[in-house]
Length: 143
Image 1 (tube, rainbow, N blue to C red):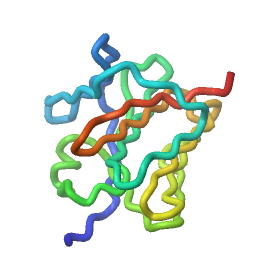
Image 2 (cartoon, rainbow, N blue to C red; image 1 turned 180 degrees about the vertical axis):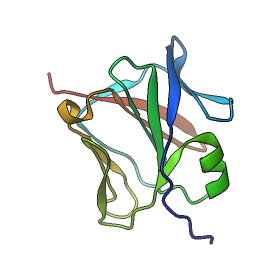
Image 3 (cartoon, rainbow, N blue to C red; image 1 turned 90 degrees about the vertical axis):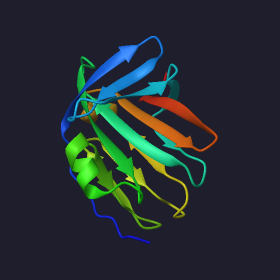
């Protein structure tokens, strides 16, 4: 297995569509995370073995930064050309990936995303997927 390293993200254009959340990469390609994101109050823990992408937007939702969590498939050159960042965590580790947004892998298989929305000062999304489907979440303040 190839060891992958952390990669810093770039700011990317974001658009909210009826079909979902669209992110435009630096190379001009776009990806659409389908569906209206479900709300999760400040913390989301994923099922084991899922791919996790975190998007933090500006307050207006016109641009943001995207991070892949524990992605070991994508080559560094591809991430650099698209503007997507990556963080690789060992089991039990946690790291603040953006101000107010912390990602942890408490058991090495699940991913826990926590957002302090006052500090993040924007919207925080988690896109969780595998070969069988994808789910979209927005971390929100408790009601």
